[in-house]
Image 1 (cartoon, rainbow, N blue to C red):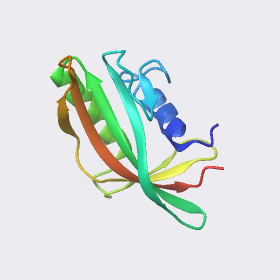
Image 2: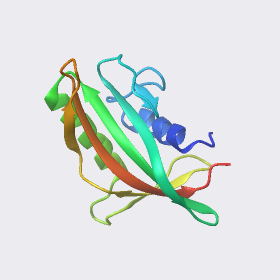
Image 3: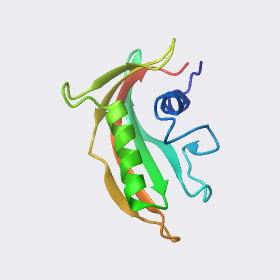
Image 4: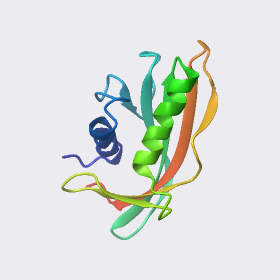
Length: 133
């Protein structure tokens, strides 16, 4: 259990997207994306809003891969895991102490290629959640 939203989401992805990411600090990163490994995922938090007991947080999901097709597959898998188009939001009980309501702000798209030619795809989401303690 954690009191850190990015770690909680990372742990959730490691369980339910294990063919994309396997371990925090190995191919799953928070608030940074190191130069290695070539194929990885990063969660970055940026400005959000605070409420009384809940917060609306802003998170960017970034996927990097040497293959364009695999980068697209990986970002779409994560997007579908976190978003329910039938209801326009997804409610997820991440663990015993964390719930989230995810509203995507955009669909996944190719951001660019980095200096070494690796593909980078991203999407942004609003996450309504209980406050970190």
